Image 1 (cartoon, rainbow, N blue to C red):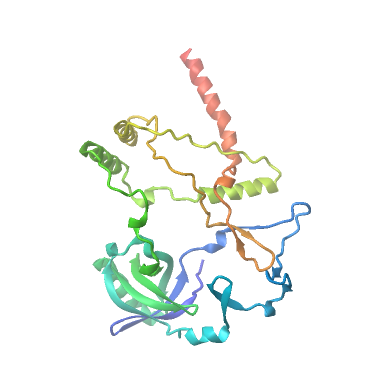
Image 2: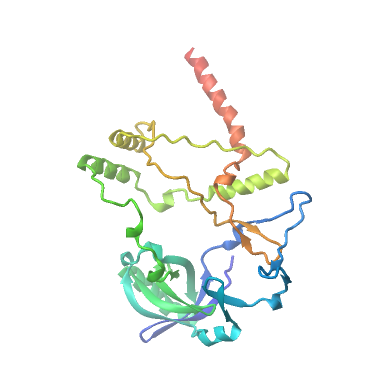
Length: 327
């Protein structure tokens, strides 16, 4: 499927200029969108914009923007004010320098875009930059104006192409040191050695690890089951037992990773149950299709494939068969 470019311009470092086009690297079209409905008749919900001071319902031309600089005190900002600070789009990503890949904190990464050469004249010089970034292990650092906003970007190689990562400015990224409970804890040499052995035994290429949004699939299956009038089966939750003896848990885990045995219990730390937002499940209102608070994983853990239910009797039959043979 051909991608549609969202930006056309140049990447420039020193005296070298490369015509490029940018493309979305993330497909947002696969998200599941829900509408809010009236419980009684399933009618769509719309929202009126009501003034909190006089309770009057307002139309769009009666609404202005304001910034609250003190409690209930606002300064009005109009379109002319925004025009005065609007950045001029230069259509050039100016590389200001190169840094080692490992020097960039992963918490700075935000949105990825793919870059491709714009026209035959750009193919060779584009390939030159891509291969140079690969061999050097460096990332280019630059800035670009997208949608009237200046963003910091990192330029890196991926395969034969180039990925441009929009990143968060360092002053907006919280420090890891501010996370509570990170005080140094004593770990024995034996525990550390076993933990490292477990990591080594579980190490593999990323391509060998199944990375799939199973929750997205479960929600789709749940929706289709309800459309078809079928029963929605609740997923059984995995039982996680806290293990006090870390050494025993590590040894059993290493044996399981080696195929020698299956660990009887999992080592786990105590944690408060947190709600997790799902990026691909959205609620939409009638007024402007704005996204409402997103559905929570905890609330929809019930959604699973009916195929799992069908598989259960087969397992029981297999167990009964093995018992009869033993007899």
